[in-house]
Length: 149
Image (cartoon, rainbow, N blue to C red):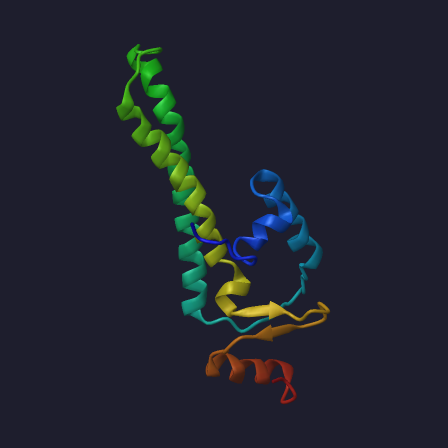
């Protein structure tokens, strides 16, 4: 029998598993979240296209999943088989649920901070760029001045 490591699953032990652990984790994240309003960034057309495409994918996944999910419940009513077990209806129900949940991934990938690869400083006064594109640096220096780094 293996001896459990004291660090294994420590994240779940400190907050508790399940819904309460998720709420505690979300509360910790909200307490440390820093929002920095930034305007006039020189964003390239490739990044704009990527954001637009991810927003479209998010909407298609969510609304398509919702239609499939609700359709899985509406089909038996439409064909008059309410109360009869039909395992095939689990496909649109579970598939729709999966699509709706996975749309959150596409939504997160399309966030401006993720596309621009930035994060707020711990004090929330500025943003830090993580490996910025050289063209972005050149345009930011043109907008913000030579002191921008």
